[in-house]
Amino acid sequence: MHCQNCNKTLKGRTDKRFCDGHCRSTYHNARYARSDRHRNHINRILNRNRKILSAYYYSGIQPTEALLQGEGFSFKYFTHLENVEHCQDLVRFCYDFGYFQTEMLTVKIFKYGLLNNPQNRLTNHFVN
Ligand SMILES: [Zn+2]
Image (cartoon, rainbow, N blue to C red):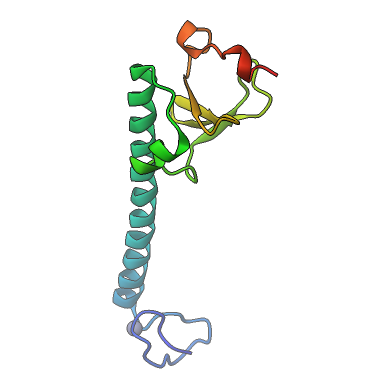
C-alpha cells in the first residue's frame, strides 16, 4: 500500500491510507479545494444564465436560442424544473427565472412568482 498523498510505501496496518496526519490533511484539503472549484464553476454558469434571462425578461424581447448562446447562456445548466400553467412540459428554471424553448427556436422567459403577470402570458401559438 502507498500513501494516497505522497505515494510513499506504507508500513504497519493494512488499512492505513496515509503516512501521517500531515499527509491525511494535505490530501483532504486538496480534495475539498477541487470540489469547491467545481461548485464555484457551476454557480458562475447558473448566475450568468440567470442574469441573461433577467435582462431579456425585462427587455420584453423573446430571444432565439442562438442569441442566448452567443451571450454565454448554457442550456446544460439549470436549478430546477417546475410545472407552469399552459405548458405541457416542465419549465426549466435558473433560480427565479424560468424558460422553455419554443418550436420557433425562441426562448420564452418567465419570472417566478409572477406567472400570472401579462408579460408571462403565453401567446396562443404556444398553448397546446
Ligand atoms: Zn504520505
